[in-house]
Image 1: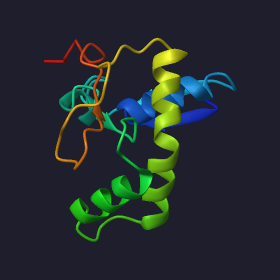
Image 2: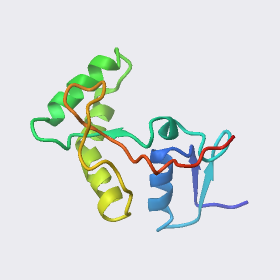
Image 3: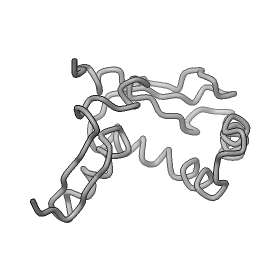
Image 4: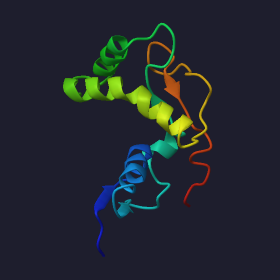
Length: 125
């Protein structure tokens, strides 16, 4: 089997990358079990991003580093926090992924969790 892009994992990040990569070549998505057996399914398609009033990238970075308990790479956290909102908006506005209309509270300080409850409506048994 030949492919241009091999994607390991079928969560939101893997599938989003696979969709974007498919514009440039052949993509193969591999998952340990079924394609719906991913952490994104358990999180109901949830992601956290700075989308609400009163929140800032600096607050999100601080929260992520605090709950990461020393396991986070600051450069990676900074990149993800600063680029996250544009990708969430791309999913919603250009790819038609339905999500909650506004961020909701979670373990993060301000409300910044956005979920796509219907994104993982099927589950492998």
